[in-house]
Image (cartoon, rainbow, N blue to C red; front, side):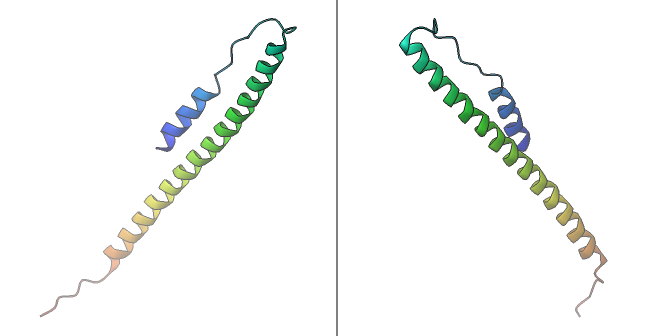
Length: 83
């Protein structure tokens, strides 16, 4: 799952809005402002997604280590036979 998130966030960094027209047009200024806001939101989303992916990867590693430790501790327990 973490790998998928990292891949998706990498795809988001390559997105760029198309140019709406000449900069003297009033609507062009508005569209450029909106594109800038979208770019900032996308950048923040990428950062949050990458942080979440890193957290999931770390948790997965910790879970695997805990399972290995528990299995070792259980194997070390003396087997008791009930008669």
